[in-house]
Length: 400
Image (tube, rainbow, N blue to C red; front, top):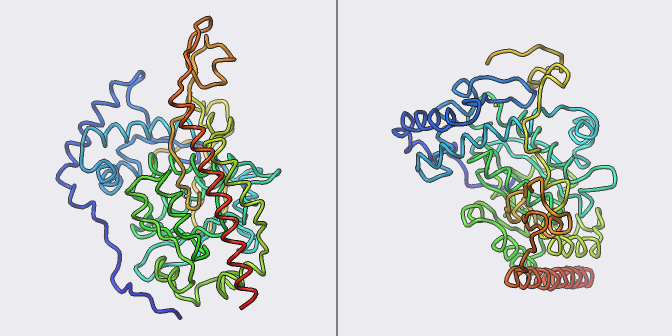
């Protein structure tokens, strides 16, 4: 197998915040108690609710993640934690039903699965694949929202509820080209706001060498500086394996042989990739479905069937009553918060994203308009450059 310089087991850096845990718990109680209705419970992905101190996120490990995400600022970490409690009541339950079940079907060949485990890295971490399917990630059958929900449920089942610390961390291999802009923007926001310090590192692969700087430009345009430090962009299989910490023997057959062998087998549609990137810049990663999820109000469990129990490895799903007891490539597009418009808003104005009461004339924001035009123009230029360089590299490889 490929040699990977990872002999020591991974260890978290957030343990330095441990002295802050008592203050954080006190601040969470204070902020949560001030909410209408008091402190919300922690809702598990199957719909069960438990007091937040008894939840996976309420453990020392879970709270340290929030402290790390806010650089040890107790008040900010508490606010992030309370917002996560509210988000979980709006996002869950999610169940393996319908299209979500189809997307997570483990009986499918590994190559046909958008989200799948690849093994354990040499430093003991779970390695998962997110496959962008060469611009066929979102289809007429599966919307971007379907894919977001499926990925969240995948993380909940396989990461949040995992039995050991190392399994509760992830290394991501982002494979198969660009991701849809709306999916990438939404998932980047969800991951950073609601699953802090789960991602240890990520590798975007395979990317032609001449395109690596272009892809990095996308990352710097839309991803935070901290996220960029965790992302590598690689053209060579050997460098990708070093990045994710796997050996060549752990790599599925359909990923072997190098970039151009993969291109010959998968035959990605360059024009389809170019169009997807351009459309992403034009829409700025927004879509009506994605911006409206999760809903503004908590999902009422009384109006739903009995929640499922948590499905652990090797177990079958069964019914249970409530019980007391968890980008671009690599999802790195921008993180604008979803718009929540007041009731009395003119539809014409609302379509432009301006929250003005009906009858009030909205003043045009020329600076924002110019910014959007430049984003679209730059996106088109980069998309054209990416397609051109990819085609040129393919031609050079076929002639050599």
